[in-house]
Length: 630
Image 1 (cartoon, rainbow, N blue to C red):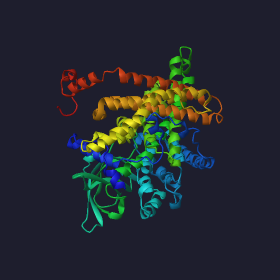
Image 2 (cartoon, helix red, strand yellow):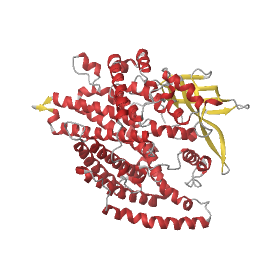
Image 3 (cartoon, helix red, strand yellow):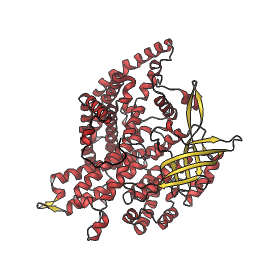
Image 4 (cartoon, one colour):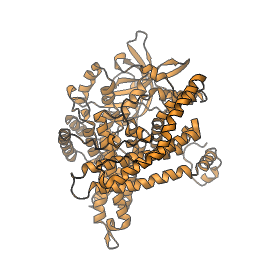
């Protein structure tokens, strides 16, 4: 069944170049083709706002929260006593004794099931811990999260054999560290171009692994790696289709070499390196899953693994909120604290409202992952996209609020007796979040592909040139029957918006999301009809549509979250934070809809094409040239 689903392409590739066709076929074969559970995001993009999928908010069970509180307290105290994040940043090193101490606390076995000796924490508790660590030290967060969000523990938990689990899980309990190796020097988001390959031996007992991997977090200090490599291609419809397979590779295996530890703008103590594999003998029992299922494994792992980034971004945003609140009261200019000037108030209010929305999205998607009753591929991608972009903006606003002190290193502030708020370090650390585990641009394309899936499935037989005429006619009538009901609903549905009965003062925002989801669904269909197969090239248009959907998801999450937190906090009511966020989000959405109608996309494309061709090289005159001349 899995192979048959994998082989069925719903997108016509007959007119594509060989490279594009190969890339698309590999990507399509790797994605999850069936929707076994409901998806709030998928329904929303189809104009069906279903508040019951997130309201009442799926709160963390009290006993699970109590377990998380215990571990949070222990880890927080240990880090406060033993880790200086500014020293870590300065020396590019997390001390061995800190790593050993974290191992004793079970930090490298947070996601290892309890039956194998691990802590077996829920996704909510895991993300609460990552959120807390990220608010203090980004490099330490990366060490722990890369190991188990995308490293060996997560794919092993999802796809590993019992023998593999018994062999490796106990090693992580003892403190061994893992890494994930997918990216290559010439391969970013296009796995069809992967060069690393594994050839199976004639006796079938091992694979011979050769190739190179780039930017593998934890790899210089890792004990075990998950390595993606091409294996024997598979014939599909008379053509060879590349197959990517996942392997567990021991660092001690002959032929494994760390050729460089990379040095980046931020996360200075991150152990990120480039690897080389030369005739590495990998036992066949170290293969994870079947041959050709490696990218599916990677995508399924990332669906949950990328939830760490929203948690980390939220932790950093909370720290920023704390800094601007305190600094806004402390620093006086023109006779009053800067937090009382309207410009300062605007920043504080925006940071507070957005941070609350980030927490709502993080907690919602984390709980979805625990419940396993929602297909989270869209929600996880929107959470990563929303929180990484929002987190970067919050750090930028925080630095601006701090002025020159925001640009100054914490050690320099400390040297003259000032509070060493590490905003400069936080900005360097945060910048990578819109790039790793899917750039914001790739996230928009991923969201677009999944959002259009219901339409593409219905129309696939009509779009393919190879479809028999009779089937095309049948498909055309089927489409006519579906859209004759669906399309009018997207106009008339605004008259009966779906609003939870207990929405209270937030009812207008639920009503807005319900109505706007219909408009979004219409706009997506209009774009598909207007551009046809070329829509994938209209990335500006798709970006606006996906931004609208992401904002609507965040609005829904924050309203439900606010209602669930209403009686649990003292001081500012959560509904006020949700209200401001939704007001601001609605204005951003209006801007995106406007840009779909009135834009400069043609001029942008034409001008960029000429600049890339060198027609504006005169504008580069007067500089000191860096790198080879072209």
